[in-house]
Image (cartoon, rainbow, N blue to C red; front, side, top):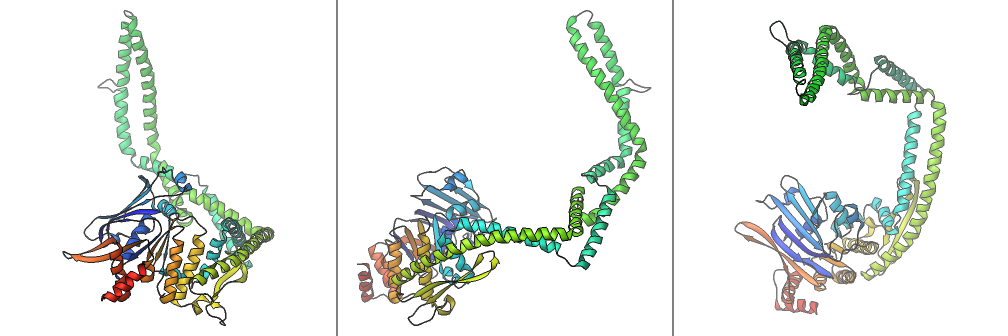
Length: 548
């Protein structure tokens, strides 16, 4: 349950703190007062996408936090290694540079992790949800969610993906003879060219490094010559090797008079051996540079060939070798196409059979769930002042596809004697809102989300129907927390908590404020909702009667 919402610098809200309790909450206010900003702030702490444009002008970041209580044990906390506490604290900072910092119980989490948690805490339903009912491609998803057939759907999705892979493999094999001959000739040329090159993994990198060394051969020769002189000496001076030999001889003499000198002599002797090896390696390296020009020409020619091949087959030797393996495999498929086609056809038939079996199981589950969904929604609509409505899930058999063998659309007859028709043909705005509310109520009973938010889902509803919608939401709030943004006084009158969203201008800046209304405040707000800006004594009495 959402207990506290704190907002800073989001749009025209400089700062607001809203406390919520159990039951039915309504948010009302003039159009443009900022009710949608409250919903946007809640969406932010649920991990939904936000934009830096929501940050209040003149500030560098926005901040929103929420406290939830009575949160059931969720696997999410184990999955993301977040400590469980008596109260769940979610915080999110949104910066002008696009960064988002999200924390749950003080621990940093990603936006996607926060979204995963948020979906288990609050479900938000808006006006656009009703319009989505016109999209018949979504109807099957609604039925699947109601049926709870997720595991079977996952099994079918995997089986159908195998069907798609088998079809793709068969398509690759089943090319016409002319194309097959052209492709075979091209592959043979590519394979010959790469095989003649006899590439080795990492060869290009090694050659480029060696080329760099050889191209600086003169500098290397000078440096190595100087190093050799320092080590071996010349006509004018002794080198390190000679000096080390002299030092070793003197320590040998000294060790005759003091045994403590012996370890020092041994260390110096070992150093002498190492220096002798080093001198030999330096000399060999320097002598090897004398043949650099010939080697440099060979490396240049080899790199020219490799770079030419790179333009055709890949950016590295490893990629070109992988291309060679793929070309050999594809050529093998073409040469042995008839045999491989038979194997692919057999694999496809087996995959189709397996997927069809799962699709038929899925159809049986959907068919049974459709009957229950029809009865549940019809009962809900009856309570929403649509007692004569007929609501039907119409199946259509389709070729095996991503959704199985089922096409589905919702049909409705709103009046006695009228035939069943698609929702887009028969549902008015008010009827569509009630149908969506009925579906949401039915679907909400399938999950454990503790808070439902309805953002102006009563649009287009008035009169007795509005009263029925209000009573329905009131009953829903007996089992969970309900927040509703509304323009209907019938809805606001039934609330356990009434929040007024108002906007004002101070010092050439716009401010939105949130106020929890007492009884007198509720009467005045209900009167405004009934009659607009002109509030009379009669209007106030009518508003007061609605609260009794």
